[in-house]
Amino acid sequence: MPYQNIQVLQDGAVETITINRPDKLNALNQQTLLELSDAFSAAAVNDATRVVVITGSGNKAFVAGADIGEIQELSPIDAHAFSELGQQVMLGIQHLDKPVIAAINGYALGGGCELALACNLRIAGDNALLGLPEIKLGIMPGFGGSQRLTRLIGAGRALEMMLTGEPVAAGRAEQIGLVNQVVEAGALRDTVSDYAERLARAAPHALHGILDAVNKGADLPLEAGLELETDRFALCCATEDMREGTSAFLEKRKPEFRGC
Ligand code: COA
Image 1: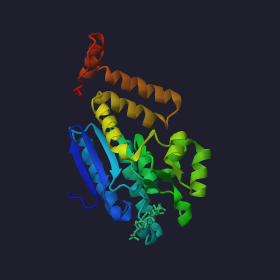
Image 2 (image 1 turned 90 degrees about the horizontal axis):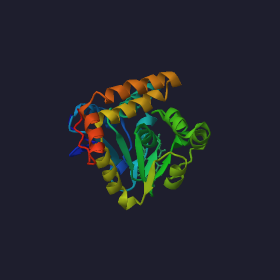
Image 3 (image 1 turned 60 degrees about the vertical axis):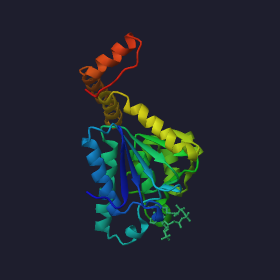
Image 4 (image 1 turned 135 degrees about the vertical axis):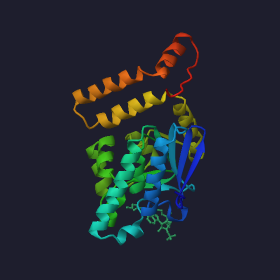
């Protein structure tokens, strides 16, 4: 599928997806959501990709939200389909069997914040502003924000952000656990790249096991989550990478994981 609104760059094992509508601060219209859906489906089956980074083009915005111009034209039936499309894209990201890092290079508002929430790790530049300001437009989050923000930072803070619509600056976002790390805006690209390279060197089946146990386990009763953990732990022990990792430790050398 040729893309109009996103760019995909493969650099070794790291795939970077850039949302590229800088004149609209990378707002997510329907076309962009379809392209993201396609790109993440492709990343899922691309053996060369071990880690995905998602970011926005320009130095002002990660994503400034769902496209308000499109939202204004939605009938309730269209709105239902638009919300489902956005949620399906976010679920595809959350359940990708490879780590996804959001490089938050500016505004991450509405759908942009929801996109970041669907990623496994969020690294923000110190110019980032994150929020769910939908209330100011007379609407509410529709791409999973009401659910994921609450699970990530707790109902009290999530409700404060959603009911007031006030965004939080990067430093505050780090304090409340909304982002993993804040770095100087100019250092964001290199920091994320280092992070991605590090994850790309890790054992892929073990990464997948952790993602699955945490993402799926979060919605399960403890005993069912523990069972999932046991299954995934046992699967890791069926891999060559487990032999390599444990041997490398005992032989006092660096492991070389091959994903098998
Ligand atoms: N949807 C559609 N277009 C958007 C957009 C969005 N979510 N966010 C920004 N844009 C567009 C603006 O309309 C403007 O387009 P124009 O030049 O054709 O008029 C362009 O992006 C630049 O935005 P602008 O508002 O001029 O930049 P700013 O620096 O003054 O303000 C923001 C930046 C992010 C504070 C402001 O754009 C904003 O509040 N955006 C909406 C955020 C939001 O409510 N998101 C949730 C949507 S559900």
